[in-house]
Image (cartoon, rainbow, N blue to C red; front, side):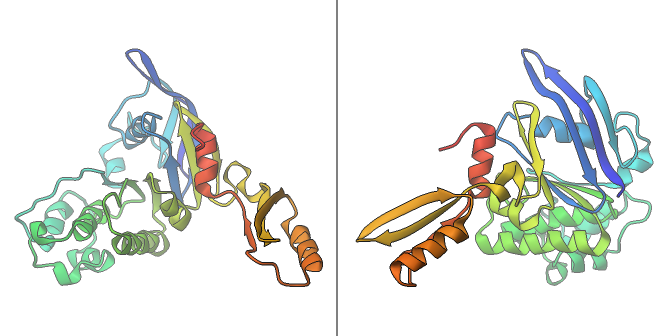
Length: 281
């Protein structure tokens, strides 16, 4: 598997603080990789270094085989950005906006292709300022992918979206990944978004990577004890166990088959994340 991103010993300091402290990171080509962490954890600094917008103090960084601090102009054509607070050209139509940004690339997608990919074909002649928040975000993505990027950075892409718009956006991200094999680096505070999209996730806190894994096994989540709950003699009861099936079978035998109020739960991704960052509620 080819690495789209390889980071070793990344460090960055600002006056009075160490923002990034020895980060190691590998992202494989074609995967959707989520970077999680509380505010001030070093996510923005790390991503800006990978994008080539901020210089590091220490460590080695390769993005698509190039050091972002020394990469040639051609490298920039392979990078797509969808920023959290992206600006738009409000009085231009959607098609005009995509066509404008396409001119910056040597081999851009056609306007029709981009509009179809991002679900904006029916909005092609509409001015950007007349669109809903979710549709304007799709315009941001259209700008980000018009140059056929091999690596796409998505920074808090669904902030402020309603549930329906978020799920539509998730479908778009999956399409980008599946159709072109685009590598996607996603930063978000929505853990359900991570579970829906990410192949792997890293948790960054205090400038260091705390854990890396799939959403299912992050921090030992897949092997954590389950909590079995039930109602017996009018009381809610529960027990923690590594073998919930055995507990449920025993309860069924004791209670004659049906187990009132039966629940079997394992730690959620949110539970594991809060433990990792030391903010368990």
